[in-house]
Amino acid sequence: MQSSIVKKFLMAISGIFLIIFLTQHLFINLTSLVPDDGKTFNLISHFMGYNPVVQFILQPLLIFGVCFHFIMGFALEISNRSARSQKYLIDKTEASWVSKNMIISGMVIFSFLLLHFYDFWIPEINYKYIDLNGVDSTRYFEELVHKFEGNIYRTLLYCVSFVFLGLHLLHGFTSSFQTMGIQKKYLRSVQLMSTIYSYSIMLGFILIAIIHYCN
Image 1 (cartoon, rainbow, N blue to C red):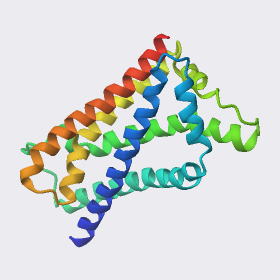
Image 2: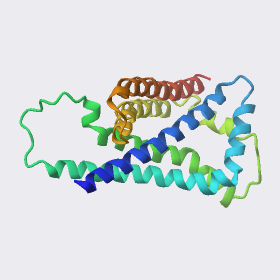
Image 3: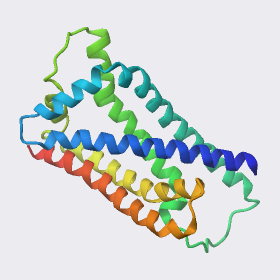
């Protein structure tokens, strides 16, 4: 029992950490919609791409956080299933589909992250540390637009993944704060924040992908 509580607590901590990252990531990507030919987006992306604190401290922490969150979620799912002596013939719980299938939405998100790493992170590492192409602070906007411009399949894949991300956050946001011990009188406020945040993240990223596809 204590082991399960510790796992849930660590799961909540890593979830909140990833929520902070997602917020920052959305704000940066939204600057790619500023009508200045990508200058703002290039400026911020270049800073993030060459800042040693971001590259050698925050980025490894992020990768660790993603892997830890996924592994811990998978471990909790196995633990919860093994704790049941037998499956219910009829599921009478009032829990939503999302809350009962967090592992499914999590696996979709993790698969999407692998694609996202393939599209952006691996080329970035290759550009800076393997090909040694020098420093070009104006390339980021063009690289972003190139991934979506006229590519309906990649755009749809990203949009579907963002929907699953929003659904995952819809339950995970509230669940994380409940695990952290938030008082019941604040639960409704947290649920409202969870709904606003989840849809904002989902629609924000979808908007970015669709606009760059149309352009």
